[in-house]
Amino acid sequence: MKPPVPIVAIAGRKGGTGKTALCLGLAAHYFRADQRRVLVERRVLVVDLDPQGSASLALGAEATGENLAAVLNGDATPEPAAIACGLLLAGGPALASVANPRPLREALAELLDVVDLVLVDCPPGHPTLDRLAMEAVGRAGAVLVAMEPHRMAIAGAARVLDEARALRPSPRCAGVLGRLDERRGLDRAAPELLAGAFAAQVFSIRQDTALAAALNAGILPPAHGRAAEDLRAVADWLDKDERWKWKPKDPNQ
Image (cartoon, one colour):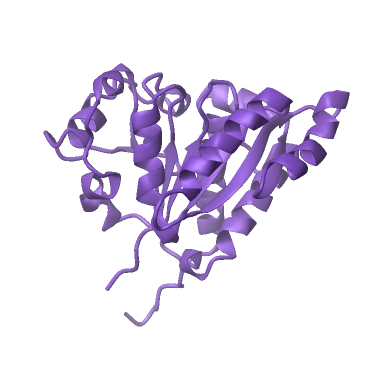
């Protein structure tokens, strides 16, 4: 029996925190790791739950959200688009009207049979879809709470963390400071401030023009640079859980 597919909910209640960059950066990381290990067959599914469709637009996909909205409402089967790092269920404006979605693992059941990891880009300002993703995580995944490096944003992110931890079963959680600019004193102080106010593992993704340029150009985030190095640290933390270990395919099978 196939173990539960890990789902990572990348959450945060406001825009501009770097959720999409974190989601696509991790997707690129796992795709490239797959290329280096030729005996490992791994597919990543990106689920863009954002009515703005930022992840979909960054990947060059049509961002209407119509199929995903219908899937969540129980009116359609998933029709993912093939992308460079796996599969995509595109987001877009149609998601804004989703009020009573069915559980995400149920909605994605067909795709969970053919993928190994699901990365969910959660929407800002839509608690229903945000919670839908966090509820799907369970023990076989994680919630990454994206935030800006200042006090008010950290306080808001802590509330999202509390909501995630109130779920049963409680998922693994971490905070991720996005677009950290080490030239600014407030940004340099943010990790220490966060350590005292945020009861979870904390990561920082440094500002990187190469990452921003890649997302703007609709290509995979780069494998080298400050942001890529920071994203590897997040992936290494995720990989510490044995349920994340991808087993090499037996060449004799």
